[in-house]
Length: 85
Image (cartoon, rainbow, N blue to C red; front, side, top):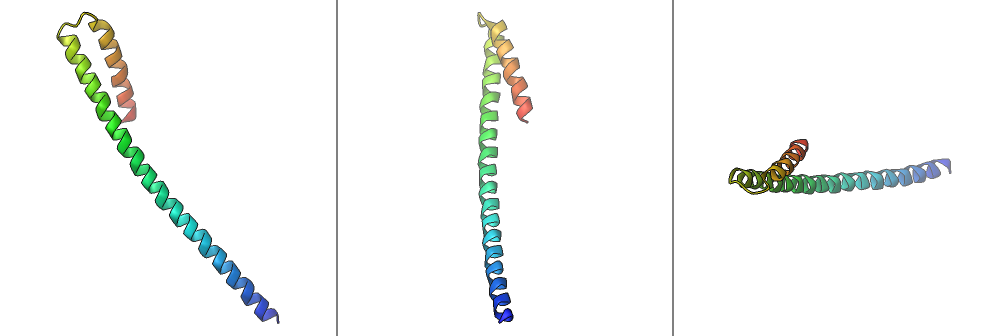
């Protein structure tokens, strides 16, 4: 009698462990996909910031009337961009 109960309990525990391992596996897969998406978005935003910095430098070099404010903003963007990298 105890042998049957022991094997039934062992089977239930085996099923619970398999369910937990499957949940962990799917959690890892989902986390990996989310991480890839975030890395892609960060790279895209870094490219956009670099473009803004380059355009600001070009405007200041071309003699824009508010070139001092543009250069300050560009330096701030550039500093933020370096923090991302």
